[in-house]
Length: 104
Image (tube, rainbow, N blue to C red):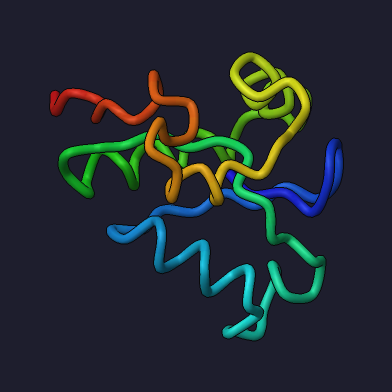
């Protein structure tokens, strides 16, 4: 999930290359929702070993009410910090979220 700011506009997407896709959103490479609403902050993510369960999860997340999504973000990232720069640190962003969700 990406956001424009704390409690701002939320975007949910799925990708096979998180770092590239977040970079594209941050740089405004593609016209669309994230560029229009200034959504540039990676605030929550899950890893999946396979794309099919990731797509299913994305669709489910989009169905949930906004407050549910906010609660999910704030459970692990209460200050809505941008997690993207953490990928370039040795300890990484929210290391407990970096383990892939097992395939079903």
